[in-house]
Image (cartoon, rainbow, N blue to C red; front, top):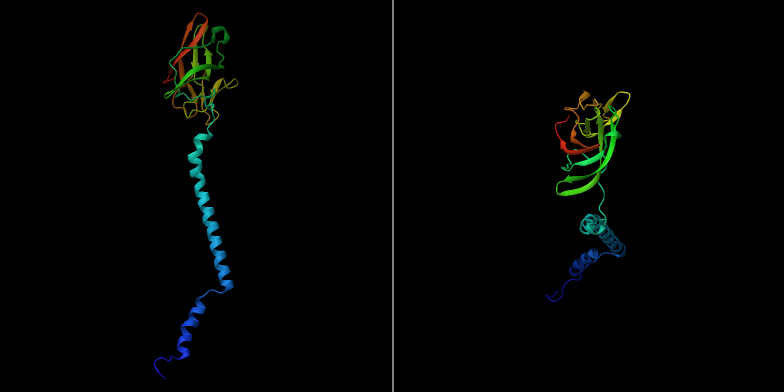
Length: 199
């Protein structure tokens, strides 16, 4: 055998290996299926991750044109007002009987000043003396209500109670009820600055 003549068996071996590496019809369809599944899963993951980003970017456009009214008649005592506000006439309040009153007042919250209805507890001590309390417990700020049976302001959260004078009767409150400055002009009663130290 000459050098130019190569045995057929030597050439057939590499060709046979190449034939084995080329995917057949069923292997090709499986490969395409897996690529499609991976593409769909990748797209779904990208969409799930993109939703919060799109929401964050477009959120300013969803805001209401009219501002939400967050202040209610149970405004926390941290909101202050330095103005004198009329709460009614002296004759509107019975001596010794607390009365819950809602008054419109300019409330200062940081840089925001807003007129809002504010709840207060008014107690007429004598014919001329009126005391006005903030209706929140000094423990954790839960709203207080007057209990005629117990003759006390009662906190529904942790069982704190206060006399009509604002003094602590029982429970965890650390100090008396918080109150407002009051003044009487003629027969009209006004509340002023919030007094942080209580009655």
